[in-house]
Amino acid sequence: MAGNGVWRQILDYSHRADPYPLFAQLRETPVLRLEDGSYVVSTYREIVALLHDPRLSSDVRNLPDVAATVGSTSDDAPPGLPPNFIRTDPPEHDRMRRLLTWNFGPPHRPGRIDGMLPELLEIVTGLIDDFAGMGTTRVDLVDRFAYPFPVTVICRLLDVPREDEPRFHALSGAVIEANNPATAGIAERQRRREKAMADLGQYFATLLDARRDRPAGDDLLSGLLRGDGAEEPMTREQVLSNAALLLVAGHETTVNLIANGILTLLRHPEVLDRLRRGNEPDLAARVVEELLRYEPPVQILSTPRNAVADIEIAGTIIPKGSPVILALAAGSRDPAVVPDPDRFDPDREHNEHLGFGGGIHYCFGAPLARPEARIALTELAYRLENPRLVDDPPPYRASPSLRGPRHLLVDIDGVEPARPPSEHPIAHLRRLP
Image (tube, rainbow, N blue to C red; front, side):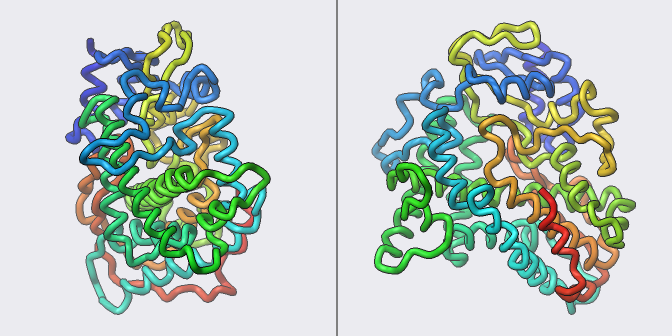
């Protein structure tokens, strides 16, 4: 089965630096049945159709051989948590998502993200300032920039102590590794993920106990605990489960988006130079959208969805009960939808991509991830003097699903002073979606 061989190569770490030729081969069979009975879908229109198809369940309790592990306990694991909102179906999904959205941003709190923009710029400015005064220097832009920036942001959004970063970094890493389809089968990955999420949930339980006697703040977690919104509040266990999800997803994917963005801009110096000149107000937004298509931070929805009825797609019947994996990165480079898809071009007239997924599970954090990436890449382009890649390709993270550089060593000749706030184009970001 040639297609299965291509899929195994995609999962193999040796192809992490450039999986896109393999994704092109995968698209030759738009719906591929794997040896374990699951199906991989890799073409744009078919992925979009399935993202909107209610016959494809996101509830892990519908996966074969998985239901018994959800919320379970064992001698070596803390009590399990209920599924978070992205692992449920309507109406349960819709209620939890509305509660989260009510406390996060638009449409219920349209000013929250806009109000954070000066804070985002302040964090970025401080991180880049740390590079200054060192002359010609070598900087790991993952460890020193792409990682600490979104971590600081999500900590402030959830009111998580920044000094706890080493602890939740290890817990988050365990969640990411548990989701790695190259390491185990579906049921075993779910068991590992249940334990990792339960450990992270226990961390949040400790935080909630510590804040019991102090007034609730304006952070997202406090809003969930108060029951802000027009619906029945989440249970404490649901708050813990969704907080754990937001902590992981709120920084892991943005780290990849920023790191992939830096790498891509350094490989395309003409675009980097345009961004540095700053005379194209919409360029940062177009760069980020093209990055979401060209080098997306989430390449594969590696926790499979499950067909709850027979689904015919691209001439193939996916039988009821089959796990379905969506290869988002392959779909975003589908030449049937995107002309010249392997070319990085922020000037595309039409940019159809799956960088934030789609359907009812469209990325909850997209309204924050976009300005984070725009500010980060704009400031790096403007302030770093003569940045040069040390290793190309750089070493990558292990996961084929959440794909991004593990380190990104860059030589710079110096750092330009930060622009005064009055001269910064941050006001323009408020007018962007």
